[in-house]
Length: 236
Image (tube, rainbow, N blue to C red; front, side, top):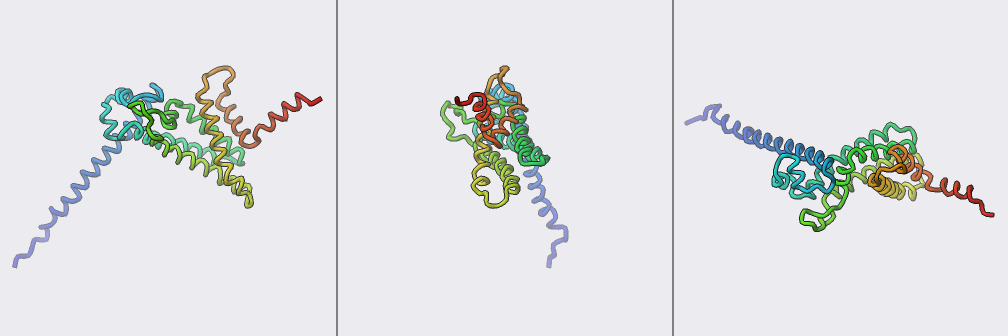
């Protein structure tokens, strides 16, 4: 009776991990290459503008357009990937700013300031991951994949606003807590993006002034301005 040697199966069992090791190294290589391409895209868009084409981005990265298509599928896929990185960084920065605040109003100001600061760092990149441009063929991209990252980003920020408000206002304020954070996000985003797109001029507020103005609108509305106008123009 032949009894297999104890070490007979060792080479076979060792072969499995060797294959897995190669697959892991290949996956690691792909992930690293993907990160490099995303980083190159951010640099290219920062310099060339938010409407940079895949060909422009690839040329700036020192590679071919086919490489980007292989990793991201199409331009919408690239915007989605860049958006997840950029908006993730913005989300973490906003959360850090909010955590250092002592009051809900300070928290709002900190979050608005962090949002404007990071968007202003590279308006081209911000627009690249939040806009809904035409595809490479000149036709609409069907809502663009980057909207997924954008929706998640603003949903997380909405939750960041809601939590301290709920704790501060207590129970019985569902109408406020349930709707106001969503409305606040709309105001911050629309006012912020209009501010970003406004050409530099003496009348354009700086980042700090704009952050305080948006926070005042969130907390007090435009009532103070209306009261000032009324006081200066009394009804005879």
